Image (cartoon, rainbow, N blue to C red; front, side, top):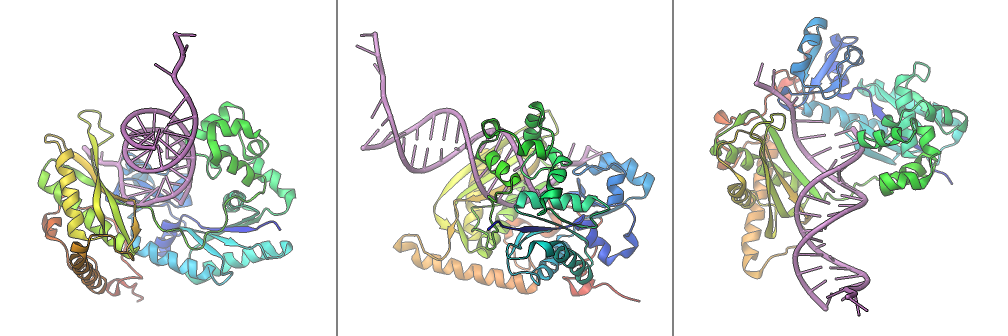
Length: 423
DNA sequence: TCTGGGGTCCTAGGACCC
DNA sequence: TCTGGGGTCCTAGGACCC
């Protein structure tokens, strides 16, 4: 039996979240910025129409923003994360087989459903999510995830589709593929798109009909899978419980470059501490710690990048231990005389925290460390993150490396003090 | 002056071992 | 003259996704 997937994707998600709590933004150009208010990472349709590209540095867009009164927001992840949960809960009403693919997208397995009813079902999903959460979505339905992506994209853009497109009827499929340019296909990025165009493949239909050997040569196994998916043969099944993480990264750019070792030390300690929290939340421990450091890559002169990989003697998620290793790695890569723009830590080769892998002598110590970490996490959970912190992360008043968010909306749904007020 | 963050998968090449 | 073959582990880098 062939499979059927629906892809439900929130329209301009971050902007839509802002609009739910500030309806005055409806119909107006709105953008949401990345950390440090650096780049544009979400745009309303009106902002797209003004030619503001995805990822554009905001300082380059100042003229357009001023001229058209574009509303600008810092990203408010507490709000978006919470809204995302509400959307996903609404989706789970329609089938238990939901894969949360990203903060604003989910795949639904609709394989058991009758073909003729799919579009109606899609419309029902569309209106339910909108009514329950206020967030507009698009729904694409097809035999594979890749085709569902294509259907979704057309559903979002076409007036006629009204937010829902069912491609399981082969009548429409070839036409849909023909109007989908190669760079808009899931799995085709800039470099593959350039290659495909260079061999005369310009849209998804031409790609589907291309010879396997040609694609395999340049795009490898993933390329072959892509061909199969376009032909309606599903290669990517629904993944409901995501496999355990293999890697955890915490890194940030600094608003202003740092030339002082003490500041970089603090930042690295803070990122390590956050990473250790993520490890414990995922019930994982790290065997490898990587610390890295870089100057501003957009500035040609005096560029520096370096990283140090450290294999830990045994796996751990203990904050103070990890900070010690991160600092010792930093010792080896830190060079005086540079102004650093970004640093980070990566935990690799993660193992489960359920088995204790250490020497007999360390056993008692390990138990103590685990208890301290449990207490640390539960205090922060109860009283808000950073209620207790490690001294190495510096005094909050002087953290020069701290990310800046100057135009942030309130945490309407996750903070009692910031609930929306109706007057 | 001002340019995000966090992931995954795949491939190639070197070191090392038997 | 003729200089093996294969496996594993690691790292780096490239490609993609949101």
